[in-house]
Length: 178
Ligand SMILES: [Zn+2]
Image 1: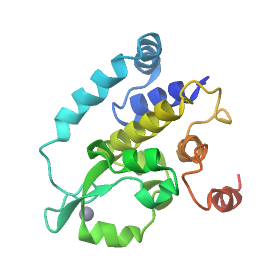
Image 2 (image 1 turned 180 degrees about the vertical axis):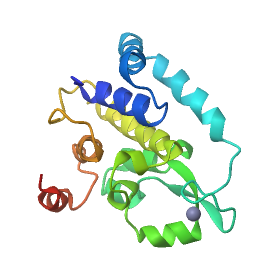
Image 3 (image 1 turned 135 degrees about the vertical axis):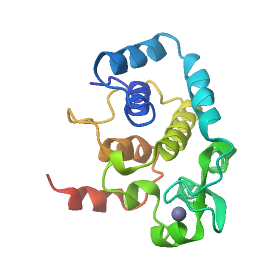
């Protein structure tokens, strides 16, 4: 299991952006932990796969598509550094008006039931944002963000809510149950 926020991000990235498992996934995380500079090359390399694709990242529509932040900038509350990161180009994904309206102002973690249902391009953006925020705050190497032996949507939420970005987190924790 991941021993730090950093490891958690690498692991989620390997699983949900690169679709790695087993030894390949372990090797991927190990390499990045040994060489932190590798993260930038990894995210840039994957960015190349999508950067000219302007279809909606959720439904593939080309109608009424605009670049939308993966985490609404309002979540930064009064932290200007975090607000700036949420508005960075890498924090945006193409989304059609229909999907944006279906999301009803919820961020992607609130909108999806599990990590596997979140498109890789969205996970890529989301994890870059989370990485950047922790880097800025100096919390990338914080120990185990309260993981319970299972990496899921909730854990990603935890590493974000560490920063008090997400509103209503406690409420959702209560709803999650077991
Ligand atoms: Zn759409």
